[in-house]
Image (cartoon, rainbow, N blue to C red; front, side):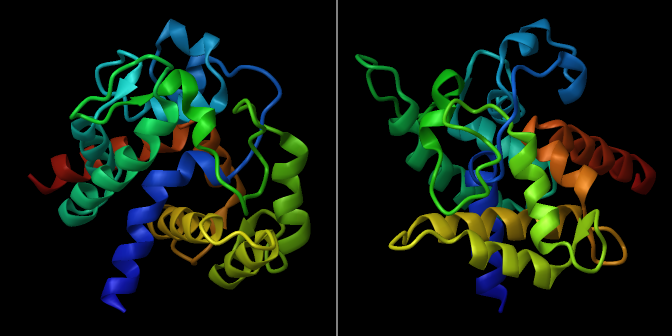
Length: 221
């Protein structure tokens, strides 16, 4: 059970940006909490990935992925293993043509849409834009207990429903990212709220998790 949970936690921060959704147009800098004027030129998927770009240079290195995962509440082992897995998978997929490989396995945010996998909700389109109607379909189809939230079982039902025939890798990625999201962001009643899920698509949820974790540390000190 412990190994299963570790595997689940590992996969989301890898693919969180990839299996959830779509948006029409660009998002504003106020959505991700960075105050970075460059955010207005980014797709929601790019803004999602930008949280892990700690120095805002357009790339996410192994170290930055580790730091970002720790910031949102992942454990040291999960963050260490996750950064290797995430960057190992996404770095070659997002590397610009003619760019040499690097030992830091940087993920190039400008090309993050190239890392999208199958068996997802299609809430991101092929360019990394958010598609509201696909997002709404998640709750129309699977939110049976609360129309604005998902239970653990409903989340599992959604994952099964999204599985593409013949796709072996996509379902694993989707299972990991959604399960990690549920573990990190469910409320006290065990619901993963619609507004919380929406914050994943532009990365704004990550900033809230980081702030909550920092506040918790201050209270304990």
